[in-house]
Image 1 (cartoon, rainbow, N blue to C red):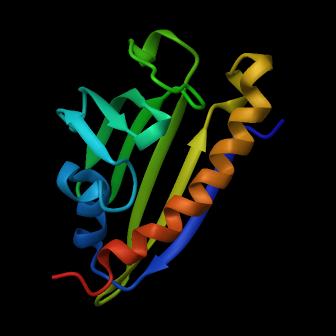
Image 2 (image 1 turned 120 degrees about the horizontal axis):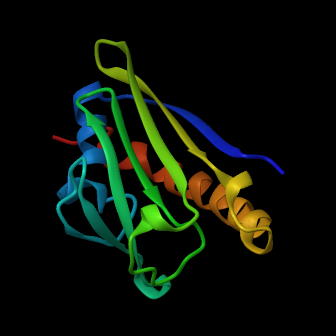
Length: 147
Protein backbone atom coordinates (compact mmCIF):
# COMPACT_ATOMS: atom_id res chain seq x y z
CA UNK A 1 0.00 0.00 0.00
CA UNK A 2 1.30 3.42 -0.95
CA UNK A 3 1.47 5.88 1.92
CA UNK A 4 1.64 9.14 -0.03
CA UNK A 5 0.01 10.98 -2.90
CA UNK A 6 2.24 13.57 -4.53
CA UNK A 7 1.34 16.06 -7.25
CA UNK A 8 3.46 18.84 -8.70
CA UNK A 9 2.30 21.65 -10.97
CA UNK A 10 3.74 24.86 -12.38
CA UNK A 11 1.63 27.99 -12.28
CA UNK A 12 2.06 31.31 -14.08
CA UNK A 13 1.36 33.49 -11.06
CA UNK A 14 3.32 34.89 -8.15
CA UNK A 15 4.16 32.76 -5.14
CA UNK A 16 2.09 35.11 -2.96
CA UNK A 17 -0.98 34.86 -5.21
CA UNK A 18 -0.80 31.06 -5.32
CA UNK A 19 -0.29 30.77 -1.56
CA UNK A 20 -3.30 33.01 -0.97
CA UNK A 21 -5.38 30.78 -3.27
CA UNK A 22 -4.53 27.87 -0.97
CA UNK A 23 -4.57 29.58 2.45
CA UNK A 24 -7.22 32.30 2.15
CA UNK A 25 -10.75 30.99 2.83
CA UNK A 26 -12.27 33.46 0.34
CA UNK A 27 -9.99 32.23 -2.45
CA UNK A 28 -9.64 28.49 -1.76
CA UNK A 29 -13.36 28.08 -2.56
CA UNK A 30 -12.64 29.08 -6.16
CA UNK A 31 -10.92 25.76 -6.80
CA UNK A 32 -11.33 23.34 -3.88
CA UNK A 33 -14.19 23.17 -1.34
CA UNK A 34 -17.49 24.87 -2.07
CA UNK A 35 -17.35 26.69 1.27
CA UNK A 36 -15.17 27.09 4.37
CA UNK A 37 -16.64 27.54 7.85
CA UNK A 38 -14.59 28.65 10.84
CA UNK A 39 -11.09 30.00 11.26
CA UNK A 40 -8.89 28.75 8.43
CA UNK A 41 -5.65 29.44 10.31
CA UNK A 42 -2.95 27.35 11.98
CA UNK A 43 -4.04 25.68 15.21
CA UNK A 44 -7.75 25.89 14.41
CA UNK A 45 -10.49 23.50 13.37
CA UNK A 46 -12.31 24.39 10.17
CA UNK A 47 -15.06 22.81 8.11
CA UNK A 48 -14.86 22.23 4.35
CA UNK A 49 -18.18 21.86 2.53
CA UNK A 50 -18.25 19.82 -0.69
CA UNK A 51 -21.68 20.15 -2.31
CA UNK A 52 -23.53 16.82 -2.29
CA UNK A 53 -20.53 15.06 -0.71
CA UNK A 54 -21.17 16.80 2.60
CA UNK A 55 -18.86 18.51 5.01
CA UNK A 56 -15.71 17.47 6.77
CA UNK A 57 -13.85 18.94 9.71
CA UNK A 58 -10.14 19.61 9.26
CA UNK A 59 -7.38 20.79 11.56
CA UNK A 60 -5.07 23.44 10.13
CA UNK A 61 -1.66 22.25 11.25
CA UNK A 62 0.65 24.97 9.94
CA UNK A 63 0.81 28.08 7.78
CA UNK A 64 4.06 29.75 6.70
CA UNK A 65 3.32 32.51 4.19
CA UNK A 66 4.12 32.21 1.31
CA UNK A 67 5.83 28.82 1.31
CA UNK A 68 3.82 26.20 3.20
CA UNK A 69 0.27 25.35 4.28
CA UNK A 70 -0.85 22.09 5.89
CA UNK A 71 -3.91 20.49 7.44
CA UNK A 72 -5.10 17.13 8.71
CA UNK A 73 -8.34 15.50 7.68
CA UNK A 74 -10.09 12.15 7.54
CA UNK A 75 -9.98 10.94 3.93
CA UNK A 76 -13.10 9.42 2.50
CA UNK A 77 -15.19 10.56 5.47
CA UNK A 78 -18.29 12.33 4.28
CA UNK A 79 -19.88 14.49 6.95
CA UNK A 80 -17.06 13.99 9.47
CA UNK A 81 -17.74 16.23 12.44
CA UNK A 82 -15.35 15.60 15.27
CA UNK A 83 -11.80 16.01 16.44
CA UNK A 84 -9.74 14.93 13.44
CA UNK A 85 -6.68 14.56 15.67
CA UNK A 86 -8.31 11.73 17.68
CA UNK A 87 -9.01 9.45 14.70
CA UNK A 88 -6.84 8.03 11.90
CA UNK A 89 -6.16 10.89 9.47
CA UNK A 90 -3.86 12.07 6.72
CA UNK A 91 -1.68 15.16 6.41
CA UNK A 92 -2.22 17.39 3.37
CA UNK A 93 0.72 19.70 2.64
CA UNK A 94 1.18 22.42 0.03
CA UNK A 95 4.71 23.60 -0.72
CA UNK A 96 4.83 26.75 -2.87
CA UNK A 97 8.17 27.64 -4.47
CA UNK A 98 8.93 30.67 -6.64
CA UNK A 99 10.51 29.67 -9.95
CA UNK A 100 10.64 33.02 -11.74
CA UNK A 101 9.39 36.59 -11.68
CA UNK A 102 5.75 35.59 -11.97
CA UNK A 103 5.72 31.82 -11.73
CA UNK A 104 5.92 29.14 -9.10
CA UNK A 105 5.75 25.44 -8.47
CA UNK A 106 3.24 23.82 -6.12
CA UNK A 107 3.96 20.44 -4.62
CA UNK A 108 1.04 18.78 -2.91
CA UNK A 109 1.51 15.74 -0.71
CA UNK A 110 -1.06 13.80 1.24
CA UNK A 111 0.53 11.25 3.53
CA UNK A 112 -0.52 8.78 6.18
CA UNK A 113 -2.63 6.33 4.17
CA UNK A 114 -0.71 3.32 5.51
CA UNK A 115 -1.85 4.18 9.04
CA UNK A 116 -5.56 4.19 8.13
CA UNK A 117 -7.78 1.22 9.03
CA UNK A 118 -7.32 -1.60 6.52
CA UNK A 119 -10.96 -1.51 5.41
CA UNK A 120 -10.70 2.10 4.13
CA UNK A 121 -6.99 2.44 3.32
CA UNK A 122 -6.97 1.49 -0.37
CA UNK A 123 -10.29 3.12 -1.27
CA UNK A 124 -9.27 6.38 0.45
CA UNK A 125 -5.95 6.42 -1.39
CA UNK A 126 -7.59 5.78 -4.78
CA UNK A 127 -10.39 8.28 -4.21
CA UNK A 128 -8.06 11.05 -3.05
CA UNK A 129 -5.53 10.32 -5.78
CA UNK A 130 -8.20 10.93 -8.43
CA UNK A 131 -9.59 13.85 -6.46
CA UNK A 132 -6.23 15.62 -6.28
CA UNK A 133 -5.74 15.18 -10.03
CA UNK A 134 -9.01 17.03 -10.56
CA UNK A 135 -8.55 19.70 -7.90
CA UNK A 136 -4.93 20.49 -8.74
CA UNK A 137 -5.92 21.04 -12.37
CA UNK A 138 -8.35 23.73 -11.11
CA UNK A 139 -5.80 25.64 -9.02
CA UNK A 140 -3.95 27.30 -11.93
CA UNK A 141 -7.25 28.35 -13.49
CA UNK A 142 -8.16 30.19 -10.28
CA UNK A 143 -4.97 32.28 -10.19
CA UNK A 144 -3.43 32.63 -13.65
CA UNK A 145 -4.40 36.02 -15.01
CA UNK A 146 -6.31 36.92 -11.84
CA UNK A 147 -6.07 40.48 -10.63
